[in-house]
Amino acid sequence: MNLLQSIILGIVQGLTEFLPISSSAHLVLVPYLLGWEFPENVAFVFDVLVQVATLFGVITYFWKDLIAILAAMWRGLLAKDLFGEPQARLGWLLLVATVPAGLFGLLVKDAIEAAFSNPAMTAVFLFVTAGLLVIAERVGKRSRELQQLTWWDAIWIGLFQAAAVFPGISRSGATIAGGMTHNLDRPPAARFAFLMSIPIMLAAGLLASTDLAQTPELTSLLPVFIPGFIAAGVVGYLSIRWLLHYLIRHPLYVFAIYCIGLGTLTLIVYWIR
Picture 1 (tube, one colour):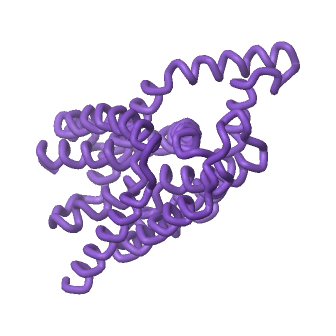
Picture 2 (picture 1 turned 60 degrees about the vertical axis):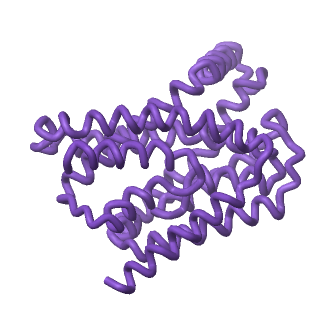
Picture 3 (picture 1 turned 90 degrees about the vertical axis):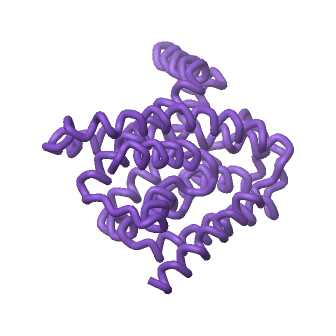
């Protein structure tokens, strides 16, 4: 991987981690469509680093919210009243919503790894993302806010996040769709989706860091990967800000159309090759 490829893929990761079009799909399909071939260990190191970068981006954007949530949860623990404050209750709901994806990811780890090496399967999963976005727009009444979330809502949205362990099924798209199918308005659904991505991304990053530390080429790869890391973090932060404003007035259909287009293009290229 050269410097230009690192920056381009970092920008791609930053854009697609939070836009509902699947970052994992793009990290598989962009190199595939452009004919870029990277050794497996190089791709692994880069993928881990740019995912950590986008984690920094979402933490930076929601820093004040996270501090308020953690402080409220701590006060609740001390007072033995876990759900006494709205922010504390939101924090526990976020943790509950994280559980399904964590359990499912461990159960189907081998299938997930196989999917990442299959561009055609990734393209098919993009159609699943498109379907979820369309269903969310058609079914959701967009009449509820975050304060009205229940435990069942959190589990339901968590199940949607569990489906997004496969490349092509957008984590943000699936979780936003999960919230909207339970009648959350678009911006609150996106806000909850972004906040609930933090625990799962943090856990995934910690698990991957063990393998990352054992990669012998890590030091030599860093000078090329650091610009991509910075690009992913900055663009990820900006994409969150843009999407939350966009969803105030606009539906998700444009992202569904994009997923269908990219999936179709990939299958055509796959068939030709």
